[in-house]
Length: 305
Image 1 (tube, rainbow, N blue to C red):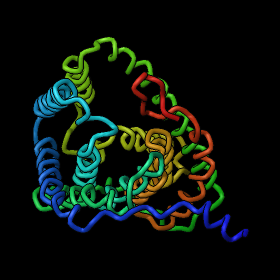
Image 2 (cartoon, rainbow, N blue to C red):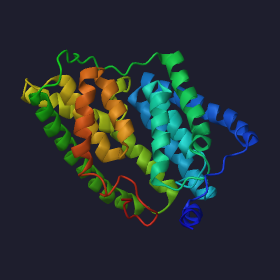
Image 3 (cartoon, one colour):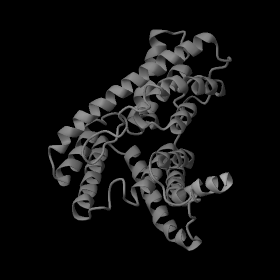
């Protein structure tokens, strides 16, 4: 009787998509990936004005979709996830980060079918975006930090905890500021006003050198700056430790994706000895962010938690 009850309570396995349902996604996903890679290369090699124009054009395009084709943009749409994966693949020059993003994202929402069925098209887009960027631009994600040649010591752990905590607090401040900024943009009401205004704002915030691969993600830039600032203030703090833990804390607060945060921080410093510190520091750094408001809003403007 107990076995029958347990069997009745066991949820059925997720259905697998038929093999013929996946191939039609290959070509569109590949096109999305190639376009994302070419756009990234164009932005990286062009002026700030080109970046400004591209962001404004993107806002106009998305605004038209939201306005004229309801349901084809936003969380329930089909192609934002492959586009996100393609962009991440192009930015990092590797599909690994894209795979981490799209495999961790379903954990926070309902998913139909098997995991690999859901990540099939996004991973193709990520691979094509990464290959396009690599073949055309040969990017590097190495900021040139000196590697940490010694094993982590107690002072390294203390510095990592302090810097990661400061980055988390700074990142959470940005999350709560985003709520007010988003509310200001919502007062524009029409998507053809809101989304182009978003593009203009992003373009205005990007006056630096667009070719610098480290300045791809604002969170990575801020975390890197925080780590280098800690090293400048306290020279005993190794720059690899400062940058890695600063980026880790900032990304945990902004993205709530631990895999991506650990991957990005580890790739930036390329020091195997720092990896153990990152794993340790990620545990207390996660406590202040879990269950808090995210940098993602529901349709009514309330934050996702």
